[in-house]
Length: 278
Length: 288
Image (cartoon, rainbow over all chains, first blue to last red; front, side):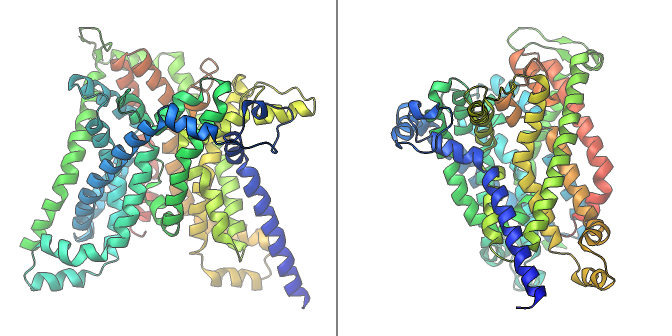
């Protein structure tokens, strides 16, 4: 081994160790919550903090079954599924149209969408709440779903737009010559090719609506409360419930980790376009 | 041609929905902002621009604006310093990059409320991991979330914990599009690591950095979940950002007229940020 190679190996090792140490330190809050969720109160409040203890699943069971989190999970699933099922189809339609327009027409529309994405959500939350009260729709699924679909549109359109741009226009032209209408072209020729993009858009929209807090906080009540709202009001209450809230928080996090492993390769595209934090 | 005209119909469902669900409420907020209106009380009183003038002459408004700007500058600085270091490290590392990427990205992708709770359980006085650890060494810690200065620092760090991965990812992606030939040329000219970063890498990242800074700045003006869970704007109003103040006005004090006015002011500020950065953004969005 010559000295150049030795330096390289040394540098790579140092780099690896440095990153590994940082990563572990950075994840301490998460690891700590995970440990707490398996702790009995006697182990949760020791000085010094302990990482060796008799684990218990009791609090995971309690939070989901006795504290009503199953109910909130169902609410979250209804809201997220509803949002994805409306947002992705109508967003894809619009994105396809934009991707087939001359650039000079599409550009201003895309920029307007970007501006809409940057709207302060608090500004919308107030009229949503007032109008929702007038319409007697507070604490119903459709109100929250509509709000989430609308704020997700710019993101979905941008993401799908970038996928549709990758599909050559010659395919459309060929279909048009064969007498396909725009709808038929979209339906028969383009959609099957855009399937990977649709999956990514669906998963990101799912993430956005599952994580969303502000609208869920002001537009839901006892019946339709979603998981983030439930854990926020629960987690702050009482240190004696720590193990239970930690169990809830960890449970809420798990599906996201799974989704993330799925979309991992597309993170860059998804995030630089819309930035997932809605 | 006819085929092209058919395409416009595809925009109708999405843009129709956005008009009804975004633009109409926005117009309604503008309308509400000209009224003295307490939710639940029967009458609305037209006051013109009084809500705006009242807000602009109020210390609490200016304080919340400065708090927001302070948090924005603090967290953007931390996020770029750390995010750039991490992106460079990942860029240089030749193996197991993907595992690091996933692990480093976790704080950003999990529900913000949950991420903030994780941090809160570290920072809570007496029982939090930090205080319990310090107590082991007989160190008497400050009340992290109860002291105005520390609470602000905690909010900045919480925002940084959640958003550094985002900055890291964007910079990492940008690094991979770098022109290798340029870097090689600099090396041949005898430039060391730091000089390459300073004179070759950073200049070519400028558009991406401007884009990301602008997105992050606008995000801070919408920043709500973390502050709501971590400090609730407290102690007192030490960490009350403009968004948090709007929430207090609208949903605690139920002064929806004044809250709408504050929302519109926020929108104007965000629009100003967008306008400032838009030339660079417009250059940026043609290529994805």
